[in-house]
Image (cartoon, rainbow, N blue to C red; front, side, top):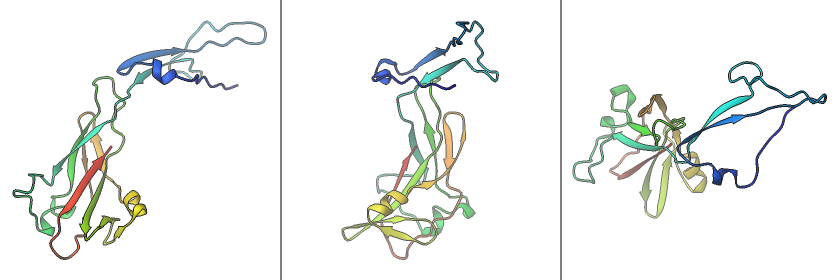
Length: 171
């Protein structure tokens, strides 16, 4: 038998940055009540829950952003895993130590041409439009245990010509 308990407003009464212990007790048709609670066996009847309501944050380390002063790069000098200058960064999930951790970090690379934003779709493809904005988020490799390190294990294909690009991350 299975069950679900999800009363309206439950999320609102559970405080952030807390650990909760959930105990479940069963009663059979003969009115026998469970008196042994298992947290790790095949019949799990209790568990701890970390309440983490704050989203993680990510920071771009490479390429460095210096507000346009010197942030000029040649295509072969940035975003190339084969030359060890790939996109990298860190991610954190606070508060510590009660956090759920960082599962994924994604990046999106785009540039503006006239009044249209073009999003990198992988390979040599850049596309524009609402669908391209959504599909333009690219997975990275995440490792560590807080702060987490992320990097893009691949090479960016840069279009010909000088452009200013926007690199965004989310986790």
